[in-house]
Image (cartoon, rainbow, N blue to C red; front, side):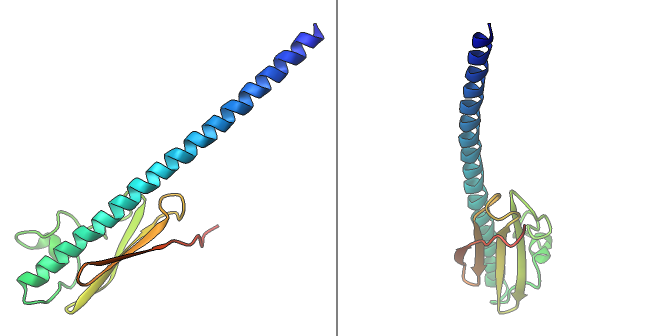
Length: 139
């Protein structure tokens, strides 16, 4: 009687161990897919911001707006919403620390490095998009 209970316990522990391993692999894959989607959205959003800024400058004698809000308030609107104010979105924070009449630079950085994204994206005047790996400073 005790021998059957011991085998049942060992069987249950093996099943739990296998299930835990499968669950861990599945969660890692889900996180990787989520990161890839977030990064794709972040670079696309920065390209959208850049296009709106470049179009505004083209229509205003080469002068860029003072801030992103100008792009949403003008008629016709260059952007449907202010992505910097709406931040964070899909795992990324957006900022445009430099918007001057002569140029701009905007950033997209993950809300949690290595969990919501692996890359920091920077776009500058002329639509030049560069990326670099984020560094985990928190924790």
